[in-house]
Length: 124
Image (cartoon, rainbow, N blue to C red; front, side, top):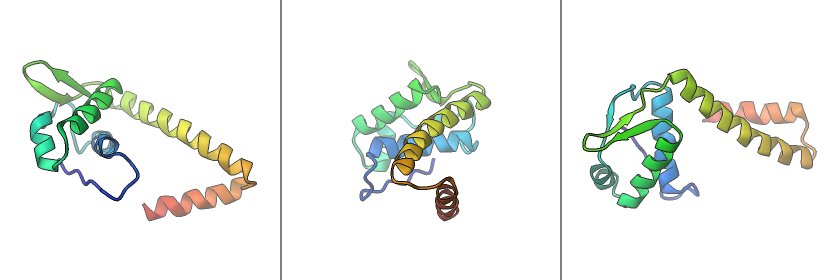
């Protein structure tokens, strides 16, 4: 699993890890039923606290992206991929709603907003 952590990012480490795992599940880099590293081994590999990995895994499990089977390990959830995508879209819509409200409050038009979105989308 390829996870890149930025120590200069304002995003907490657990969230960076969680988001990258989630994206790899959604784009099928990580397949349904595929095993994830143990918390201890993953923490060692990424040189982060066990607590950081535990929190990322807990949040992913709450969101239905992974499941832990006692005595066996942690695996990509066998849930329907469409359902996982729907969950991700719901989160994105909520975040966009907050941004749109901020944009409207400072007078950004729909056209300006779309242009900003397109520009950022192409950069990422």
